[in-house]
Length: 253
Length: 253
DNA sequence: ACTGAAGATAATGTATACATGATTATCGCG
DNA sequence: CGCGATAATCATGTATACATTATCTTCAGT
Image (cartoon, rainbow over all chains, first blue to last red; front, side):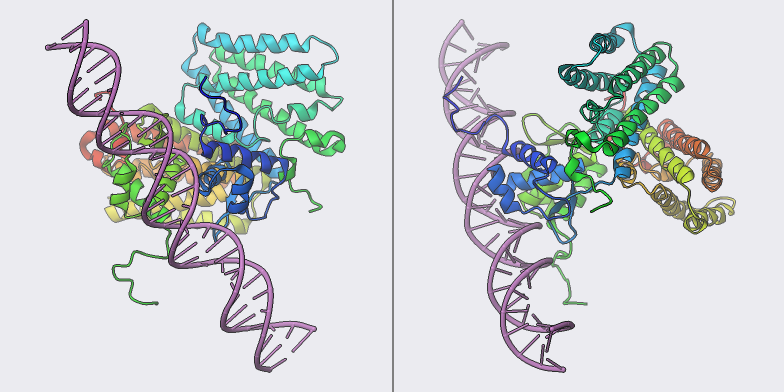
């Protein structure tokens, strides 16, 4: 196990990745405010990495969509409108629809479909409890993310998978982005049940090689996330469960 | 006009951009072969920039999709199968379809639609000559690229525009990627006419707020590019007109 | 008091030196 | 003669020093 890694900062992971994670956390936590230029020196202090990896991390976060390049140099945190977020979700849904269609049209063996069915069965199990516990919500997030990842892989299209990953990089555009946010809503249970129905339908459609149906249901599935977004933004009670709340520009700003 | 910029390498553009352009050219020209690790020192020599900007350029080219990170460190040129390319085109077509639908559903004023109509009219003018000249093909490429860019903008959705730009970054996935490649084909004239018909239809659909129609026709429009790809790969006569031919892995490799 | 310019300050962009880790070549052994 | 291990070389990842450019402050003039 090598020498004791006491205060030694994990040598196993690169400084660039460390800086990227640290900066992303700061951005999502709102400690760096949208519109303001990100100071490299300040980032050096807070991340512990040197300027070179910090700079690298900034470029990667720009590509990720969290940052925006300033014409005169440097980067600033991007701000997102409600419309931006719902459009991002719809883009992801459209691409996932394409993935589902590819899977259906190109054919998927029973063995390949198995992981997806297992995911679905596990979610069914979760939803059996009648007032859904917070733990169950947490498990749902994991399983739902897995379902979407596996489905995407079934497209067997590297370029498409790549694009979906990039579209899901924004935390609020990710498939599980709003699940926790909806946990506080009274409609939570219903929404989860509807979402799971979508999962069932897309499996069925792929199994029967119904491309158009598979595509349509994944699009509709994303619209559910858009609806959650709207609900969460209106019911401002548990707004803190929203991912990247700090990046959302409200009309009052 | 400043002092004569004799042998002085454009100070106006950053070393990073210079390196990025130079490396991209080398990759597309095939001077760097897929699978082989790109040596930073070699890149430093060929681009004239230092290691830092070269490294920056490599990261950006990776995000662009031309390079792939090697687990042990560094980057290599990515190789693309025919399927990869057609899938990339279909992804772009799907996103452009979404853009057209957004434009149609959300509404576009007559004034905003004007540039699109102008593009279309200019292309009509080009296609009037009966054996289409090489110059006309070249003009077509420019106008077609403009048409797609303007159409994308009409979606008025920053996240979508961003994704489309990223999907079009790969040279063979770009809207005008295969126009020149098809110039050598006997079917060239017909294909251009059909493509232009698609342009006309999408304008009409947006004007009449027919979202589904606008979306469908843009998808079909991309399929035309896929067809061109297939044709060009079969008729190996003018294969050199294919963009990034060096990156396409054939069955013989 | 306000506008403009000029200087000072601080930031980014670039270059290079250093260290760690990977890759290859060579040598020894089976 | 082939395979494995060790050592040397080379490449990448990181840190830091330097220069250029943008931004802010201050001072002068109207």
